[in-house]
Length: 529
Ligand code: KIV
Ligand code: ZN
Image (cartoon, rainbow, N blue to C red):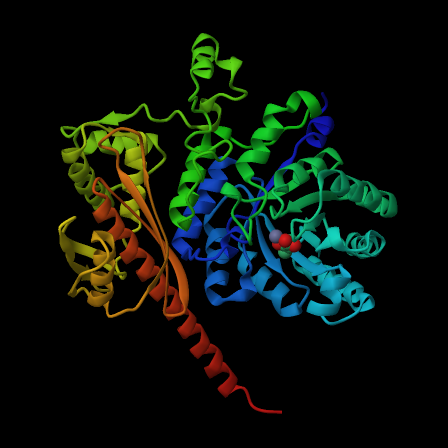
């Protein structure tokens, strides 16, 4: 096969975990966490990272800029509406990337044009032209999306896409913004667009599907079969409402059914499970056990007939090998006598470079866990180190807790929280069970009122002495935020998760206040007309 043919068969993976994915309620990633995810996405081998929507807040701008400066390999993309200020901000944030891309969008459906944009089709065409022209003046690589395209008149969408290509767009993406289309319809839409806009052949076309009807992966696949060579997707399928096309599912679909279409991606699939776990931990969005590819049960066999078949020959009931997606990596085992070097080597093997104070802190946590657990596996280590890395110098932190509870007495919890000032604040409370008592004691210690929105506990690995991983979503100070905690004791994991969620919410609220104050000061400084 010639290089040209090889390239024609390559499906580019455009990851939007940090932009569309981050728009999920309760996700509040800070810049360091976004850079950490982006670095893992680069290890995974994605072609494009949509790092954020820089105009939306100084925090978003800072994160996109940090990713552009610190992450090598993939194209780094910033999102912008067709407004000049958006495109200027996107370019400002990505200009230091080795491979920058501006992604600009405007709706082409009449519902959006009339009700949201409150304008008309002629204006949309003018805005699309001006936006692509401006973006192109900054950056060679420009992507254009006609938002809500699948509910729009295809003839009008074609006119707008033709304008974008004429002005130099390198990628044209067709979003199924509200997850409304079906595979046949989406494929037909692509075919019709190609008939109406012959110049689309000169650029890359792209799919962007939401999962409102559970069809995001199927629709994306249909678009690819109809000629699109870029798939926009998010790790674990996170995103607005029901989410985006799941990265791991579309990648493994393309890989597993290469026999049908001959297409490939450049993804290092052995990094899929680790990436999925990292995104789940940092976003607080748990992975359902039966989730395809990365769910805990995705390769588990319960029925005797299946188990028997797999023992005789794996392919009787498995279409993929768990090792292909990196789910096997529980082979590293440390015990309570393992030393600092063994821990560092094991962590390095898992992709964590931990030195100095961070290694000391990780070692201390490892010893605490190893004292209570017979064996510490790779998954345990990953959970402990990720948990330890979440501790921030200037954030709230669980210092200690004690709780008295039982079926014949009212629970009573005392919790000490290390405040950002360094002081320790203690709160005491009863509650509806020990976890509730701990949560109320934390509120008293920190002087905050929180509304608990979600609480989940899961085991990191199997076995009686498994580490517990707790996810908490709460609302306080007008912010929804999540936090996770890991410990052998689920009460401790719960307390850690709650303090982190609270700390994330307060940090988000403080940033928003500071941004509002800066904006107000700027308005005051601006002379009137
Ligand atoms: O869903 C959508 O339409 C989007 C666009 C910004 C591409 O996310
Ligand atoms: Zn979207």
